[in-house]
Amino acid sequence: MVKIYPSPANSYITIEMVDLQSKEQIHISVINTVGVELLNHTGKIENGGIVNLMTQELATGHYFVLIYQGKTIVQKQAIEIIH
Image (cartoon, rainbow, N blue to C red; front, side):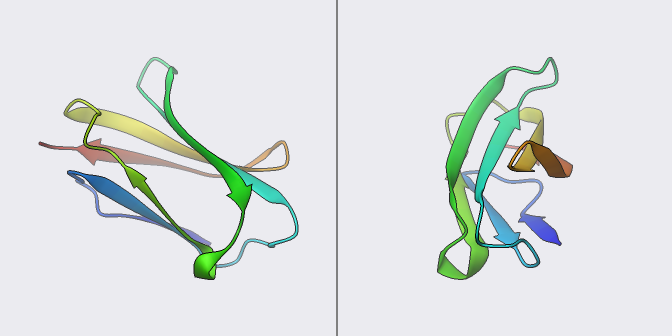
């Protein structure tokens, strides 16, 4: 299970990976509505499975957060950014 909050967000989003295995790297991608990747993070699950991504550079609007483990998408969630 993956929790992504807050939404709407302003300056950051928190991604909490509760049930993902820590042996593989994960890749987090934030894309806009036309599929362009604007933010990303790759690494092993550490710090209790919590990753914070700064979103203050993103324009107000709707985005998707995609979380990959290996080549498999384990979560896709819409978020909203409001400044």
